[in-house]
Image (cartoon, rainbow, N blue to C red):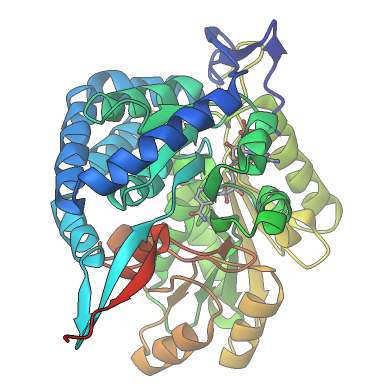
Length: 465
Ligand code: NAP
């Protein structure tokens, strides 16, 4: 999808800030053999270890990842462009999991109902297909519960971040029995071969909704279990009673973090008519200019390059289309003047009057764009716009000092997460599931309810004689 070149059976892994070659990564050609090894490793892993023992091994793997964070974080920045500080945050986040493991362990315990005991049964070989935007985190979010549940796992990292994927998998696999956790490299065709393999019993994918639909159609004839975490077009609603400074700050910060390449980026900002002009001014004059675009290895740059030149062209097309159809360009930053050939910097861009019929409004953009839309300020209209103007339903946010209004809107928005005067992802408790409603997901992970999706309940009835 990202147009990553493949030459002589290798991915040409390039740095989007410099265009330089990082490495040549051989594409996995023995998919069937890898699956067979995972299949053979499944029985001993699932039957001779307890959930607690498995979790102890996973903790050691995470310690290992923590110990290589000074290598791993810069590698993430070099492979996909995010600022080093954000990459460090991603690695620290994956390593800090005590409470998480307690919830995971509780989710896997047998439950007794009189003479019936419900135990958890692992599924078998699980394939994890991961995206490039959080290339370490998105592997572990799925691999940890899958492995703790007793499955064996094959990870196929994104073609854009193969070395990060390899490093995460190898660090963790060191502490696990042979072939319990393996890596396969390549583009979507390697992913498709894994999904279609009949020995694979579950597919966990984080990526676009388009890829999710393809995976579901391949998995359907085998009734394969799937957990798919997909795209988003998150709405933020700013009522006239909002703390405008706080709302404007968050609108900019969460449209731009990871260069706007976050599944739950703010992509549609609905601003009440009464405060619209003031809000636009604060966004474009006070907050957006703080975000300097440049190589993420230099700390002053808060917005790195987009992941690839293909992604840059996609965002450029959305912005141009919006301007051609009447959106107003309120602010656009500079990009590095000496940007090397093959780099993919895109300026921080603020647009108002973003409307239906513009690609920037109708489709997932995934770029450093703050997209503002005026609305009447009425509660009903806000809910209609948030729910009916997009097929997605991942995150969302509502900003108002009116607590009752906030609660009513939060209840009615069709999304897996709603932040009231905040960005939900930043404050969500570790016990909560991560869910995509509508076309943003199929199945879900995290929290006790999410952890239960990586094994099946089985009831053993033992009536005393
Ligand atoms: P993507 O292109 O859909 O790819 C996701 C993974 O699936 C990659 O490993 C990809 O391999 C693989 N793949 C592609 N085609 C396949 C096929 N036909 N069969 C099996 N596997 C296939 O997504 P992306 O561009 O990497 O990631 C960005 C998307 O992820 C955005 O839409 C974003 O919103 C979403 N996302 C969602 C969440 C969430 O929690 N909901 C979190 C992060 C990202 P290649 O990369 O090698 O092609």
